[in-house]
Length: 112
Image (spheres, rainbow, N blue to C red):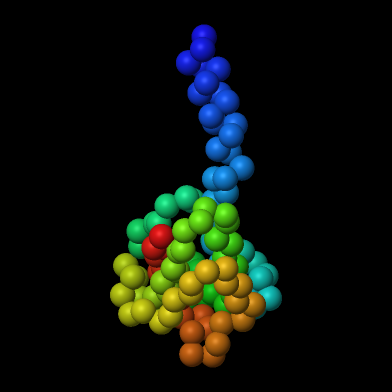
């Protein structure tokens, strides 16, 4: 019984410290019409947007959580993370992508 009690206590003690990052992508500016909602605690490999939202993203929200690590979000205009159009570092919220990048996102990856 003691190992279970110790494990439960340890799990409860670590729970508040493990707040995950969260990335949300939106079809329209001003965080309207969410098309992607992804969260985690580690970096993520390249992810292509669904075909119906390819080249149709205008804003994003990023919350790095309180993991104590720095993540970078790489944005690409081609599938399979080809043709980097930008990146963000830290807690970034972009209510409207600039004209050069608006409606051009096809894939992204998160490096932590």
